[in-house]
Amino acid sequence: MKHKIFASALLAFSAVVFASSPAVAADIDADAAQKLAKKNNCFKCHAIDKTKKGPSYKKIAAKYKGKPDGEAKVIENFTTAPMVKMEDGTEEKHKVIDTKDMKEMKNLAQWILSLDK
Image 1 (tube, rainbow, N blue to C red):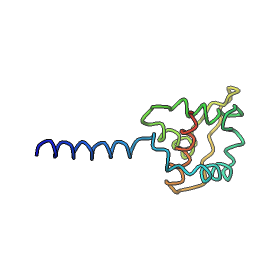
Image 2 (image 1 turned 90 degrees about the horizontal axis):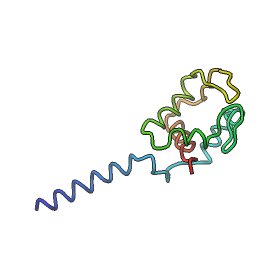
Image 3 (image 1 turned 180 degrees about the vertical axis):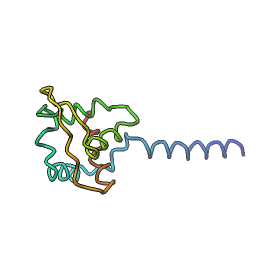
């Protein structure tokens, strides 16, 4: 009986950890993320795999790879307009993304972070 309870608790715990893991990328809507990025002119400064005025999305993903606060940091960058250092050394305020929908913001951040492969 104790083994069944332990096994059930372990299974439930594993399911919670797995579901909250950033490695669960099946829910990312890449098309919606890219559409939001285009709508907000993000590709003016960023590209997926090459440096422009800002770092590539792959470079951003590598920076936050394995960090539990990576998603929050990416969202913070496009919602709070922090001063950011450009690739040429200049600094400017990061553009604030034009959406209040947290689901859209999380999807965009998760898409960016998924590009570390």
